[in-house]
Amino acid sequence: MDLENLIDEILREPAFVMGYELSQRLPVLFPDRGILEGVAPTFNVQAYADAGFCITAPRSVPHAQWTTFWAGPGFGNVDRPQQAIFDVTWEGERLTLLIMHLNDQGGQYHYYLVARERDIADRFHDAVCTYNTQVADDELLV
Image (tube, helix red, strand yellow):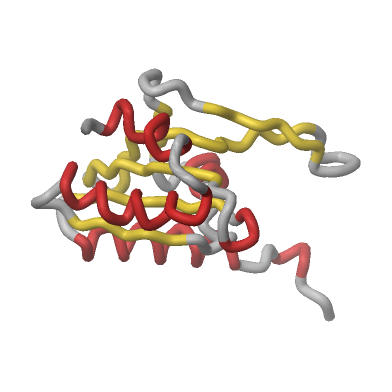
């Protein structure tokens, strides 16, 4: 078992065990690393990277699946990863981000952050979610 084959292997599992399988396999692949599993919709790492707070690079292996959706007038098309692994650089740390859309828990996407220590994954997660819940000045009601 290796990270390059993990997505393919997990997608072949029954939907109701996919999340559990990932939760079980990642600590075996990364025994000395901190792992955070999440489903928060505010964890939009693309927006955080677009704002210049981190650098993300999708891995070419395994194949990254992307979906395009229309975000509305003035916003156009938006590409989102469905199944993908990213290398992330943030505050001098290197993290691995696995994004999976599993057919469980209402179809939410699951993400798994792997870092040198769990505290680093927690801090990155907090920074991304905090950024994505801030209200822009032009959205304030007076």
